[in-house]
Image (cartoon, rainbow, N blue to C red; front, side, top):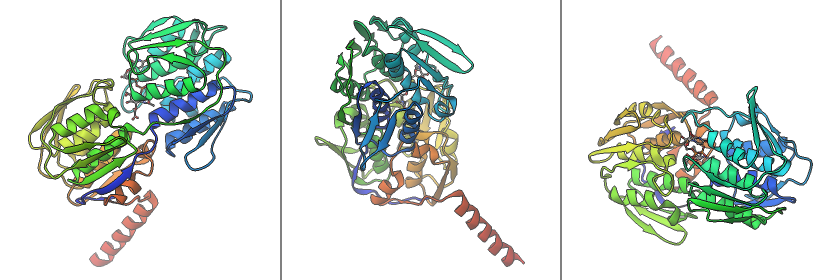
Length: 433
Ligand code: EPU
């Protein structure tokens, strides 16, 4: 339940990056000894990945505060079952490390999700190029290789997951693998840095050509996860929408290039420091056009939050979603709050309105959920956002952090809502009676 209208002010610190932490956790499988990951966010997806590792026979647990210890030195199973993979698609990234370490992996097919069909053909073709035999059947992907041999691999699209899975499969392959048209996201660089600190030999991460020279052994290491650029961007947009003044700390401004540029284009004062970004927002946003693209383009994971902001802009904006086909599903929800957005294929036309109103809305997925919560901050009256479990998959202490900045958000369980509803019906009934 969000009471809208409060101005956000103060300092907030960003947690470690979800989309990096999950991959580093998978990469830790490759070590002969335990790794310590620092700055791992305590979010639902991380706990799911801990469960995936534990079920593979790998001890993974939080020791103190944000330090996650992963010990892959025992006997490891090569199978990840459907009940886990279906909870979180990202667990597919255990395929590469299992194949590299055990010569075999059997992982349930992840299927699509609310934001798109999300194929994994590029991952599998890449493994085949390295010499693995891939078989599909009974809902499982089975990958086997007596030996993986380095080779050039040209990705048809710079897929984040395929680049990561291939890098992890190639680190122990015989010879050199060159991944061309590789994804360039900061999370790819973080994974390469982590693997290198385990003893791998990877060059070029962050460019579209990554060279992986195979090595024979990798050891455990201690490593700090990069800050979450999507969480940082979400707070900046939250501040913009509330006409606030906020310093977002533990952020990497260089990972936020296009996001900061678009916020400046929308008329906000953005000040970058070494590890923080300040936003001062005292005006209505100007209309801005946005196209989501692989990094360094505008991230698809901030598209919904930005659409919420632009729904209040002075003028008409166009957002083009180029990465996932279903990421506009939240438009019908936010339009319930009075925004004026229409979509055609991968384009959304956003006619800015002066004010939106609180309503009861439902999160279709993680980032759209964040977009709806941000809408609630700006709306007149109270907004009730349902199914916030999606948001808790990826944002650590989201409502607490926003409340610390001055928001008024309360987490209300279904049970409390039902009791409150019954009580109000009872009062209503007795009044009528
Ligand atoms: N694709 C294929 N074939 C493949 C792989 C991808 O067709 O083999 C397509 C996908 O269907 C999609 C596009 O390529 O349309 C992009 O997919 P990509 O592989 O780059 O994304 P991902 O690895 O599945 C990660 C993040 C997403 C983020 C995207 C793009 C994780 C766990 N997930 O997904 O994050 O949106 O990269 O930056 O790292 C989120 O955090 O909310 C989220 C969805």
